[in-house]
Length: 202
Image (cartoon, helix red, strand yellow):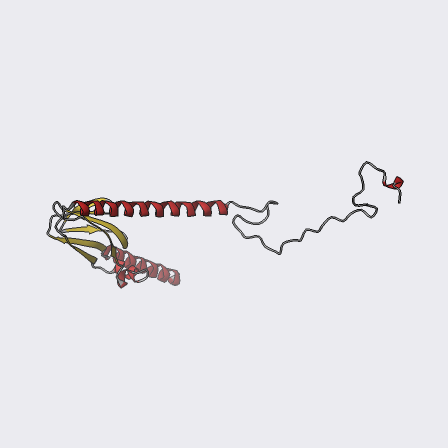
């Protein structure tokens, strides 16, 4: 009886400690800070307007983002920028970071120096052609990705004709050779099929 009471006491002690740690744990904020010179430029991330510089955007995932920065009288900026994961937020250490009773912050800074817009007609046409080519390349890449996914889906549905095997599995075993059919022993190649072979004249 004393042993059972001791085990119950230990269980509730561990449970209470875990609950205390969970309630006291902090949170992790992943922030991208965007600035520009001059300030007041509109910013889009992955085709979504997020504010004007200077601004801070809280993100959920690290990785590369498509960024567009525009301000009247200046050349638009269209580029890709990365938010890299810090060591303490990698899988594994991030579990410890989540339970630490403190608010942690991962901050990434992107700065853009804007260039005064060039109103020369040739330059405007060149920028338009460049933007068109960039969009065409992005569309072609998306189409290629969709085609690859479709091919994989079709391959996963392929099964052996006799119903054996599993979908998408390679055919096992060596190919079976096909033998040529043997001619009948009494066949006479070239013989007219309308003439009875037994009545043929030697």
